[in-house]
Amino acid sequence: MSAIIEPVGVLGGLGLLFGIGLSLASQVFAVETDPKVEEVRKALPGANCGACGFPGCDGLASAIGKGEAPVTACSVGGSAVANKIADIMGVNAVETTREVAVVLCQGDCDKAKNKYIYDGIQDCRAENILAGGSKSCSYGCLGCGTCKDVCDYDAIQIVNGVAIVDKEKCVACKACIDACPKEIIELVPYEQEVVVKCMSNDAGKVVRNNCSVGCIGCKICVKNCPVDAFTFENYLAKIDYDICTNCGICADKCPTKAIWSGLEDIETIAQ
Image (cartoon, rainbow, N blue to C red; front, top):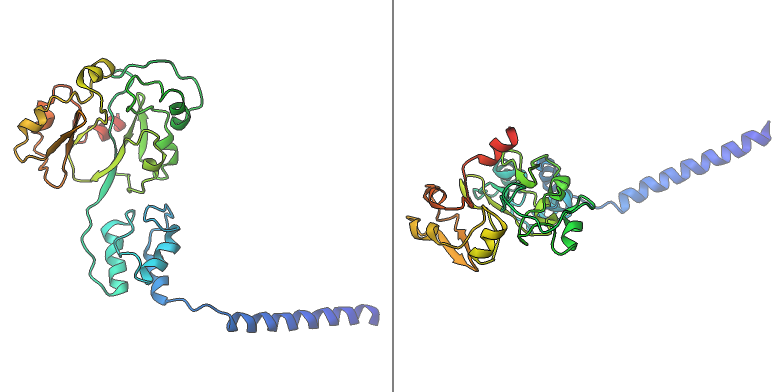
């Protein structure tokens, strides 16, 4: 009997000794954490999307606590989260403008021509390797859904060969922007009602041949904008959202309807 009891006792004693040692070690080598950092972490949404430029919400909370990141750094949380963090840190939150992703292309299967039929892996990056993709317009959305696949918020749908973002679901995490090989997804203010949905730098004649809804560089929008919100470069019109008043004149005047207006995308998704 003693042959069993003695080893058990020894093991039990060693376990107790090691437990005490680990307990003491955890106290001696404990890393003190700023309670504010823990509060900031709880206030963050926990998306861990990396849009803030830090390794997840833990990294951002630590950076905010050290003063290395602004309290408005979380685009997913928006103003509500920024205000909570500002209260924790004892500072004033600067009002942030909510932004959403927009795919700057409307060249769907009915409006844009193809130069070949793609029957490979349904990934825009893979298709783009093959001569820039199947679209005749080298700037157009390839519609394989890579942006949709990386979106954790179900904010993107592929409708007739073109990606469309639901602005009500988008949190501006930038995952789609990073994934798009054509670099045609940008963040725009949530309140923006008019956007030039084309990224082609081709001359108007080439654009007309490739897509019926592309910007042909006619400058009608530039000439008719009452607040001079347009710039024009490389055959392409662009809107300065800080100046634009969303009057919609440019969208009405655009001969190819390359300028998107209103909630057309959300209505398209809902159909």
